[in-house]
Each structure stands twice: as C-alpha cells, then as structure tokens.
Length: 227
Length: 182
Image 1 (tube, rainbow over the protein chains, first blue to last red):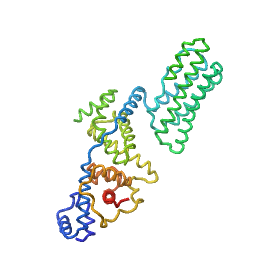
Image 2: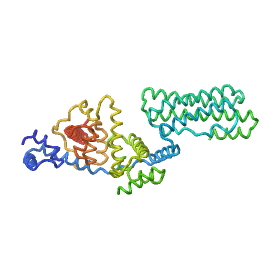
Image 3: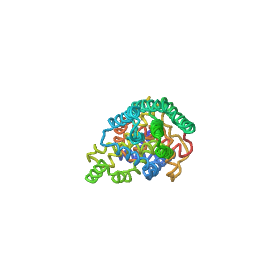
Image 4: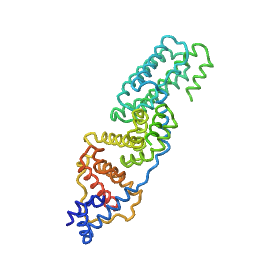
C-alpha cells in the first residue's frame, strides 16, 4: 500500500469500517510513513473530539418567547389557522364600519386583537397586511373628519406617534421588498400595523368620549394609551 | 416510553402549558446543540429552535407514537434546518451541491499536526467556519453519529456524496485547527 491507497482508505480506517485485510495493509504502511501516520492520528483525534462534544444549553429567552407565542396561538383556538387570521382581520374591518356608523357603544379596543407574534408564514401575511391597511385607512378617515374635536396639543402628540409608527411600517415594508422571508421584518410590519390600529381605535374612542362630554372616560383612554 | 410520549403529546394538544414546557425542557438542549452546529450560528439556532417547537406544537396532533417524541422532534429539527439552509442557497437544489462549487477538498499535504487535545471551543468554532454542505454532513456523521446511509437519506444525496462531504470537512477542520486552514 502506498500513500495514495492509504489516503483513499483513511476515512474508513478512522471510522473503523475498513475490512480486516485493508486495515492490516494500512497499519503496515503507517509504520513506515510519518506523513500518513500523522494524518491518521489527527483525523482520529478529530473524530473522537467531535463525537464527544457536549450538549449546549439554549438561552432562557428562547423559552420565554416560545411560550408567549404558544399562548397567543392557544388563545386563538378553536379556529383553524388560515381561517383564524381571515376572521380576525375581518373582525377589525367590521369594527371600522360599526364605528363609522354609530359612534356609540364600548371602545373599539375591546375587540379581538390580531396576535401578530404568531404569524410566521408568508402567504397569509400579504392578505393580513391588506386587511390592516384597509382598516387603518378607515380609521384615518374617521380621525381626520372628527379630529377637530381634539385640542391642539393632543393632536400634535397623536400625529408624532403616527409618524413614528408610519416610519416603522415603511422600513419594514422596504426590508420585506428585498427579503420577503425575513421573519423579523414580517413581525415588525405587523406589530407596527397593529400598533397603528390600536392607536387609531383609542383616538376614535377618545373623540367619542369628548363629544359625549365625558372627561373621565377620555382620561381613562389617554391613560391606557400611554401604558 | 411511547405511551408516555403519546400522553404528553395529547396533553399538549389539549392546551396543557406545563406539558409543553416538559417537552421543551426534555429535548431543547439536544436540538439546540444540533441546530447550532448545523447552522453554524447561535443566533440562527435560537430562531430555528423556536420555529421547531412552534411547529411541533401545531403538529403534535399528528404524532402517532411510531417513534419516540424525541426522534420525532429531532427529524423535525433536521428537516427544518435543512429547509432554511436550502433557502439560503436557493440557486442550488441541495445543500450538499454547494460543496462542488466550494472547490475540492484540501489535499492531505504535510502540515503541522493538530493539537493532541482538541479543545471543545476550538472545535465548535472550526465547525462553524465550515461551508454549509460540509458542516451539515460532518455534524450528522461525526457529531450526531449517523451512518453515511442515514446521512445520505436525510440530505437526499447518495452515500458516496455523504462520504465525500465528511472527508472534505475533516480535512478542512484539520487545516483550521492546525492554523493552516481557510
């Protein structure tokens, strides 16, 4: 056996899967060849070290995030997955219509909130983005029509918050345009959209309380929005 | 064992948070270790681990106890990681195809010997530096202990390709560890 033969049999030799005859030939060669002997020793040590690697512990943060996601999904049951998101999105849109037509009843924020953290599959994201955008457009329309009821300072703070959220939405969409599967960008986009829906819902509820002349109710909404 | 796993899976399906945490605590370490080494990054492995368990939680209803829960989760983790790695190399049809584009194995020339006692940390770092295809084959064969036939089946390649990948990985690791590697 020469060095080339030995090298061809190297991995089987190290793995212990070489037949007896070939192994014996290798052993004979190794007694006379420093280069091959060193190579075999190195790969043997590597093999041994690799098979002895110890388990690594995941950071505690992984479980915290995971358990929160699982809880969010569990809260959405018993709906099936695809149906759930459509239903939730449709619920939000329906609320805009209710708010537009009646201006009565409880705060819009009491409805089911989309659990954006649980989203992870691209096909449903575009659809939900569209629903959110429709909802936001409806709420924006109401805010702009009725926003005159807000005092100047409140309106300015509101506009500043909306600007920040819009910036996050724009950045997330830009990231998704280049990396559609980027999960961080997906989550950021829907977190921003959800935040905007919540903010606008609070604003409409606030305007409604002010129109009713209920400063305590308005204060509660402002307090809740700031938490 | 399987009856215990089935019962645990059923409790998870019923929304028992403690049962799901029990599953996570029992298997997260092994899966995380696998994912860190296959992906070559702890941050990627954390995301992958979360995805695997989230996916498992959704799919536990399909667990029939034909294998242990640990084996079922392990397969889920390997397949998910391979899917992600393949996605990153979308131009290639298989992870291991990328090896051909990465060039041939370094020839086993005369080089300084690797340290007699290879430190765990050095080896972990060296594995992370391997090209993805070699890394996955090496991890499955040399670290996880699968036979080439099993590695080939998992990766969807021939047994010969698996052997070739592991061979190249070993020589690359040797070069990295003795300071002459890429």
